[in-house]
Image 1: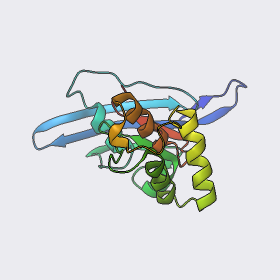
Image 2: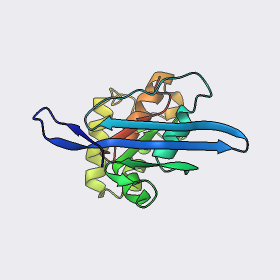
Image 3: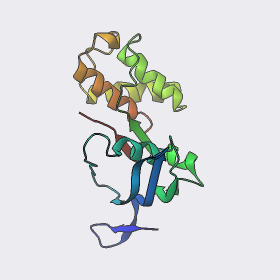
Length: 174
């Protein structure tokens, strides 16, 4: 397993490692052998022009699609053999918002808590803490459709953090 070094010199498993990831749709290759070794505790940005395969890489690493070739580990778990363990270790904020505009910000957060099977009191506490952390407490009881674009994005990211993921993917975070 690829490793990185902690500040104390001890090896630690990489948060994400990939070798030779490839993906094609028909005769169009969208990923052509990407290799990654991202240390735990780091912030990593995958940059490139439109069509470079960034979203495809995120979809593969978050188990939404399978690669045509290559291997990857996320949170110490093999993508091919332990996809459920990968899903349990990650949070994903997609390119398009997961916020439901028909319900309030707080209801969006509580829905995520339910999806993560948090006990009701813990879900309410987590939702309240994250709404405060993202400066959304004043708007928590308003329909999310009334939020500004920036508020919706903050709510979307807060929703991603409900399950306390070890690894977070932000696709098009701006």
